[in-house]
Length: 172
Image (tube, rainbow, N blue to C red; front, side, top):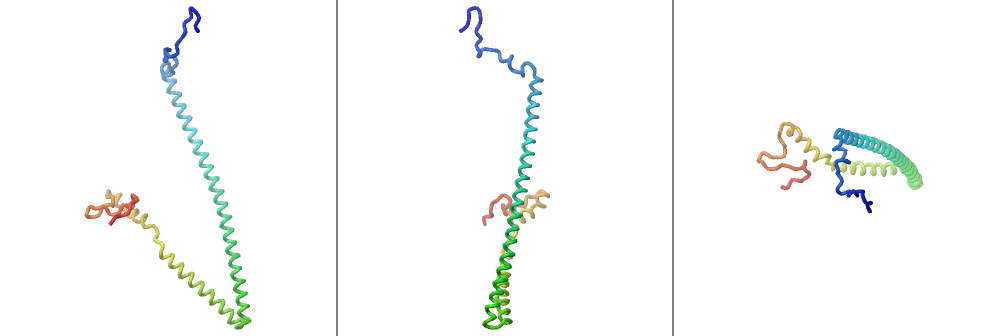
């Protein structure tokens, strides 16, 4: 309700230029935008430093745990080796009662020689099956052509060679 003799201001009809800082002082508005950009820049910088610190802490913790795990596996390997040594000695002793000490030692050594040979052959086959980095090697070979202005993707006949750089296989 309005009192007689006073005017009631309708907020929808008020002059917005009086409350808009850009209209009263444009320089002040530029400073506030500049200070906002500066604040945002500082906040982003602080956030990035905190994220890097967190990543460093997580990597250090993960590396420590991985080191402990590798140490445990190393200990398990040593313990497993000791088990094999004592099982071999037990087999040597058991066979020694049947065929004599010298012959039983040779039999146990022959069993281990066969195991070592099989493992070596299997390991060599696995290493020969490793392809390396064929797609990376192919794309690295194209770098000199790209530096000279050739894309290295087109063959002599104008057809596309391989599109490994773009993640597509050649359809021939």
